[in-house]
Image (cartoon, rainbow, N blue to C red; front, side, top):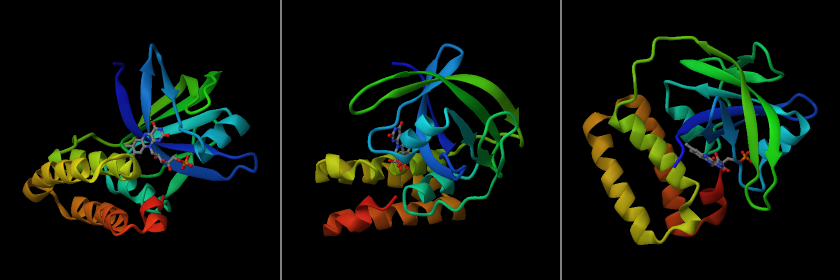
Length: 194
Ligand SMILES: Cc1cc2nc3c(=O)[nH]c(=O)nc-3n(C[C@H](O)[C@H](O)[C@H](O)COP(=O)(O)O)c2cc1C
């Protein structure tokens, strides 16, 4: 399996309007592959403007926020490509799409790393921060998973939250659990919120 790095990807549409979404970037030699499932605004934007910025936030609330309808995170202009990065991030990569592997479900955008920059000292993620990222991913797959699997994953991840979460991770966990609870209630609209 290739290495995959969970990032916050920003893309812009033909009008220059930015869109923000968490995506796992797949290592591909010196470059990275962005692989959005259809339908996706990230995919539409990459077709309209073949560039992306991948930000690495220290605050994992960005991952949880983006998948629970909270996408209003401050951004600032990218240095080399048309687009924006997270204003508050440890580092970021600027990517140019070089070629596309078409696929009816999940096309792959092969990107060249145009520019990388650091903005803060990286202090690492603790277990609760890793658990928030895991639950953020899980929250986008609820409709594909059996209830027992969701319950088992939650029980495990909750150990890391109860032992190591600070206020930011607790807030992020709360947003994500609202989405899980909506799914359990059968509230499809709220459970899809992203
Ligand atoms: C950590 C993380 C990684 C994700 N990676 C991917 C991915 O590689 N491809 C994808 O289609 N969705 C991924 N998702 C789900 C997308 O973020 C979510 O569906 C998103 O809204 C994409 O659709 P959009 O471009 O229309 O916003 C990921 C979610 C999280 C929390």
